[in-house]
Image 1 (cartoon, helix red, strand yellow):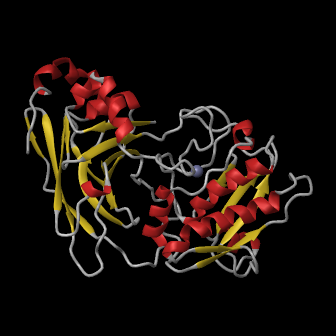
Image 2 (cartoon, protein in one colour; image 1 turned 60 degrees about the vertical axis):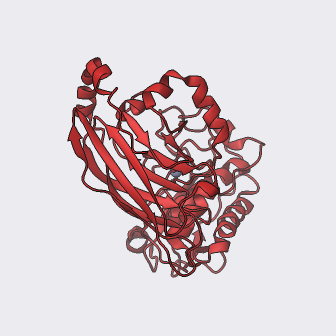
Length: 381
Ligand SMILES: [Zn+2]
């Protein structure tokens, strides 16, 4: 689920649905919000990962082996411009395997990918710790469906988590019912395959790229202050100067960990501000249930992503941008990161509103008199 807004009062925009539609038309979908998955710490830059595949069952759909090769090639092609992590099926053995793909029938999920561990070493005579992956081989899937599951799960094996902004790595990837897991028909669909997106490439470069960075940034954030029932969060995003640093910073994304509904999303903020020419997006990637699970990876976090509406609006080396949030919810430390058009990424820990369930109850009660509190606006320009 996604909602795009330009900078203005959240309350005002909630009332002006037509404006939100317009702003959605003008903001290019160029922001990246890749997420760290279970295997974000499993590899090192420049590695070639050997992929050992269990014997494909005789009753598997024709084309299953080719599906594997296609999925592997796609991720290798995506990584190519940055150097670094590559997958290799040839010459993989129990002794050298990094990733172990097995097949299953009537599984609870279409696929599953585990964090790298010693299970194969202890139980199956493997030489190293492995990432174990299990892929559904029937339950109505044809080779196209299996290809789609493999493409998604190999992303997890390489370290990407569910990204609400990646068509390939979002938790409801391929689903004809947004917010719900895909059906066999969805996965078998004869339409075009989803390839690794700009979002996925940003994550892969940040995790495993070996190409020189073209941007470097840091987010400075003083401790939030509390007044009149609202917390004030401020961030100064600095694009650093240096040899070879030429890319502007065009995205600043904050994870908003917690459990709350999309409807409550706008109630978290009384005000959002950023530099001239920037807008913001909300993303909510959690599944609402229905159908067989895609896999066992944690759901996407809620994301607040500030995005320059064009590269020209980005923060160039030597400049900085100011971002402000005003929220009735108290602070917690959470991950934030930047990206640039060249897929460079830097990560920070920042204070952000944390929607604890108890806080939400207070919030609902608080909204009864919010008319007074939320009319208090801050202006920095
Ligand atoms: Zn997944």
